[in-house]
Length: 404
Image (tube, rainbow, N blue to C red; front, side, top):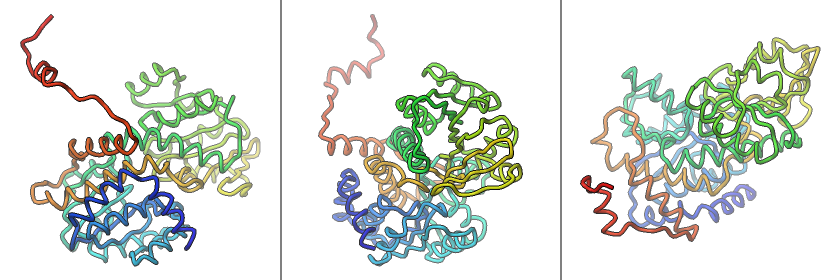
């Protein structure tokens, strides 16, 4: 437990933007009398968000959003603080959903989710009380929720925190880029320079992973299904090809698409002996583990979170059971990045409570003024100053009459 407190203390020291928001929450008590139910990766940075919400007057219940991402010492520290925390590392499927149901039993007014499992479960089985709204942390969850909106089954408004500029431009790109490689380093202790790295998906997460791979000296290949993203990857200097070609060259494969079976039997068959497989997407479906299991004669753990699959003619290595490599093996995104993402979350929760009566059952972006507030606070705590437009410049930009 002491270790958990020390982790939280270190995170707090380096989450100065959220500290500014906590000061506002402590003064204004905007969450007084409201219950917040959360399904997030339970680790030190998340604990700082929880403490911020409590300072704002909220009553909080939390569990994990991935069976292997909880840091038990942090979860113990939260429970010691009096927080209803149901998370534990290594839960099986039944235990995972039992913990989600305990958060629902808490009857939260606002839901904070990462991957949308909690929101989906509420809709599927348990929406027996009024939920004012929810906020969603990650790309995968937003995709699910937008599908629910299209099918007109979404029963309360959701703020897509993931779509805030101060989230995806930094968390998804710089956060995932650094933390994915941190997880791979810890699992393999391999040199990256000179390796052929295949990145599946060139969204903001894939961009970050590819950028960091190149910085480490790797030869980077990108696979994509989107014409525009593929073209962007080419213009950024990466080789682009179908996975069925890339799998012949790759030493390390990293998926970041949010889709299912991105790497599957037809690809495993063509891979080199010793290829390493890692996933940076939310769910463990991007690398087809059933295919890998079915093709293997045997498997064994060769290092912590590194499983060797013997296919007879070669051996392939899967990190973290195909789950989020950065959180299962590492400690997730860097603290300063999550400082912004969780500032977005805190402001989204306040916005839902203050504006829920005017929101429809849709997926909304975080309002731009809140997005820019987080950017402004982040610059301030970093000691960075920027220019302001003069009145003349404002007038010039708003006048259509000027010409050459």
